[in-house]
Image (spheres, rainbow, N blue to C red):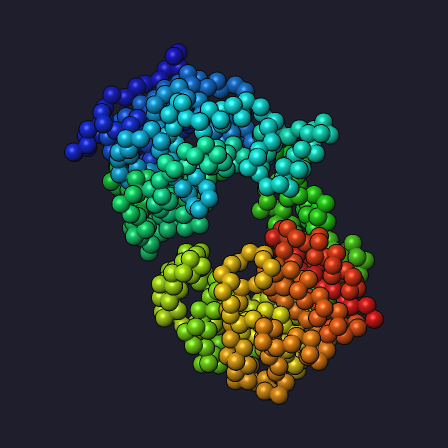
Length: 608
């Protein structure tokens, strides 16, 4: 090969495992020395008895014992190197290399951050698994050379400007428009991951080879969101492993910066990963994770305030998709969201030519009208607390239970996890919800200060915690509107919202915390006539009307029951924003107060 590769012939002996019966493993490394994390993962396969080969385009001086090396150019040429335009990452090149490896050899591909927990003792040539519902990750990928999926992928990516059928319709339309205008988008300019898991999943489903997919615990027993459990000693990730578990993905793209920047380049003592380092005799100090380098190819002036404001303006205007902004300006979605959050209000104020009341108008010394810690929540029973979790799953953040898993179980009819967390934390979950809502009240308090409502309708009010703050601050009379409960179990945008609340508990909660019984009105639209109520000065709906169900359902109420000059404060879902905003604009002046790509908060002032 002429590159000075050393091929190791020494392997760690694994009792009761015959190497010849295990499939061969291969990976690719582009970019200098290995860190201890790659050393650990690669050595784990050799230590479990797999013939393991690390390919590279240049010699690597610190390949761990037991791991073979080979020239990557024997599989796929290294020039031109396909790097993602924004990040500079060679991941696209690695994706193409991986497909060619599977076409030319019988080896199983693994990412260099995949740990071998048990031997990959599969007899089928199809080796891959679900990362999460709907997505197969390609961090482990084995396909026979005649696989329809493999050959479909190779044929598709022969066109480096191909438009992927697995993208969303609006993304496809945008790319087709670019192509038709003579500016086709190259694969290196596509959104991150274009050539990765989404493409593999699409072809596996299309060919029917998806039937070979291993369950999530096989290779991804620790999810991306819970990756830090691998390096923190108070967690025991093995509790999530099953008999199917063969590998553990370490999510290096995010894990390595965390380890290098915050963990002194090593997992915490007593953690799962710390134990693995000892097991495989890997010394982190001998191969430290290098500091993350900025993309040398990127030209985005991300530290320039004028550039940040420009990105915020483009995102809020809604004329360009998030994908196109990222593609054209070489920024990531996180940066766009940060610009919106930091500068959205200022940008919108400039554009409308008048200040929209906001938190900046609040006195710094202003206190909340409710002491959350002293709040009476004794009326909340078990079902009420369950409902609070369903309304605000973020109350579980930082606790032992995974919010996503708890909610998913409930949505599938399994209440075991939600019952357990309710019994364990009880009233504290209600107080945590109140703390979160207190922050949201502070964010919009300037709007209420500018025009305090005497009577306010809260659509999808839940347990009226927000209404407590408003009533105590302004003496407002709340009209609490909620379906209370139905058979809907969704968190998306549907014709009807899912309901989980209790208006009687909400009333008792307000009364116990200083709101007069005579000022409270409750209404369940399924049992009572919404149009029979007295008019209100303001209507609000947070992440409900306009987000989980269309504003059309309440347009008659807004037209007839919100007084002239009154206001409507809503969160609109990003995907349906234009259509819903157009409908609401019929009522009067609509202003966008800010938000994020998935939702935007709007204030409608009804015409006089």
